[in-house]
Length: 147
View (cartoon, helix red, strand yellow):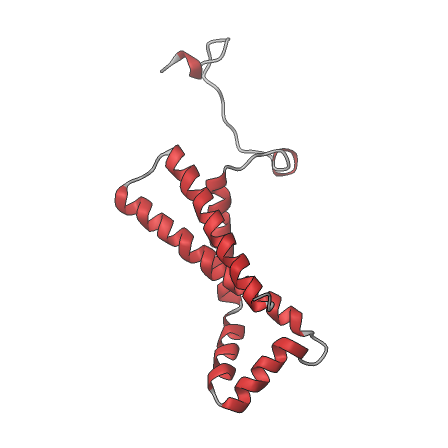
């Protein structure tokens, strides 16, 4: 064991579980940890919004009339729910899909190539975040009619 892992008293450092209320607000999670948490969250979002996705798909391909109603919901809304809210929900689905796909490809690559190092984990996590957020912004601009 190297000397750097032994403190001044000659004892090994003692690691205990972190205290949720005291340690979590100051705990600094690495980027790869955030990507891992977001990968799970994006999977949960896609699963929970599956009925909405199926409803959108059904209304968009059933007939021309249902497609026109579908488009009108995004512009005017339905009932008391405004159209921009539907666009935000769709944007959440878009982000969830993109992030889950890119993070999944990252994990598959790391598994296939045995690329398990701190440096690669950090750089690939940053790349995952940049690509997923960048593509989400581009598609958000399209969804909200900026181009």
